[in-house]
Length: 278
Image (cartoon, rainbow, N blue to C red; front, side, top):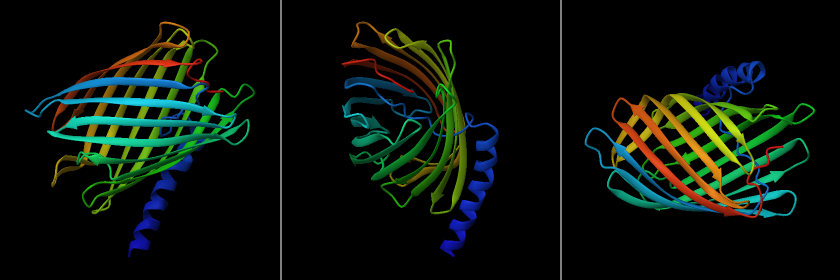
């Protein structure tokens, strides 16, 4: 029975993914993880207000990007968060590995202590391909696994893409298909983002996401299943000096249970421009 369910899920995902990937690769899935060209340290704090008498969220985090040789860039992140009156910490490590001039691979693993809303284990992996003579079109296909601290387990398939125009504009999009167990709940979400700016100056990113969520924990033993949600965010990355600056962002989230608005402030310092997508 379990094997039959897996076959049905894989068939359903492939039927939807393959035509979309061939027709419009940038209206795909997962937000492409950009390759970094530097060593960088970033810290930040966040605050989010929730409606429906739910308590606010607060948190802080520290992230380090470490370039090791010509092929590998490591990402280490620690996050301390308070949500729904529970505090926890999440830790992750990731590697972006250059296979050759056209292909690179991104893999991340994470776990947590406390915080019922954090995963016990999370694994994400993504294969990226650069296209065109200038390599300014990148497509991706990825997968993920999320083990919650209750009985829920999520697995996902995603496709996506990003296109860099000659002018300082970047268009990015993605679609993710998710399967949540128990109950075999399927959901889909999609996003599109528009970026404007240049390295060592600034980047402004406007991002919108809509779809359905298969699972969200509100408290131990209390979860939302298979519900629609929408999210819009605007962020600014501003260089102040050659190797340092700050990120600020605002977000609005809406579901049938609550609305969420918030802001994030993240200063950073590094040794070189922070992103090299080509």
